[in-house]
Length: 383
Image (cartoon, rainbow, N blue to C red; front, top):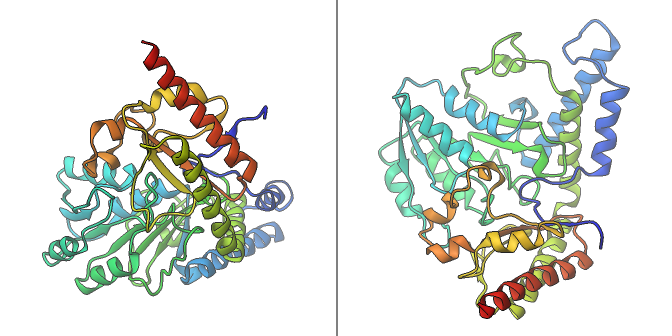
């Protein structure tokens, strides 16, 4: 196989060709500005935006009027955390396993004297202590931040239960749905979610497009001014082609998610079995009873992940952690928060399988990883 195999779907997904065709049409043919109300080019794109809102709303069970468009989850998260209307300082309750967009933004607010953080407790499987969550919620907060599914270990969190706790104590609930929407059912209306983020490039839509779903009755202060677009919350000319792509991707996920994720899970389990057969001391990180179908987060104790990556990077695309912090060369904050030992953290590898992964690629990937492990073992025995 001359082309490298791609198994880093948690980082980004290839754009579905059917989505790309829609994007192309709205870049080249139906290219109007949706705010241009004086001609049909604007009319067409305005209707396309409304259709995309409906497609997203249908997938997550929200109202289309609750959806605004952003450049992606990071912007959406910043808009919520920095745009809360209550008087400062804000009290944030957050999981230590959150994406850096949540953690870094909350910490930036703390450094400015505009907030304080209450950290939730997690166990060594990355599961949230719901009793502790309820206890800290009794003291009130301005925002609770818990993701729908973890971008490293793949844990799926009990969002309906968490939303119920937040609702009980009248705490706005920000759910980062980047890894969840399009992979598992998400019910915005009924699960007590106040703010939900969606990222296009995690569900086979283009990069640079996302959505923020805002519960009726809540509002945010804008971070970007100039024109009053999108109810004045997020000004700027809409990325119509990206919006159309996101809408189409959500439409396709609604149709195909159940079947796709079932097939993906079988492939993940097969790869896991192939690796365990050759690497007896292989560790599977996270909550294996509640994880994304395409997630396989492993550690090979006493074998640095950098040694594996160095031998396979031109054959197989997997990662040592989250792409959002890959430039920092620091140990995963997720694995640190889980109190895993140093050898497990240093040997951690994140494998992400998607709808375009083939059975042949699964077999070949196992061979590539197993061969790299044997090469390292033979080299260490030699010396």
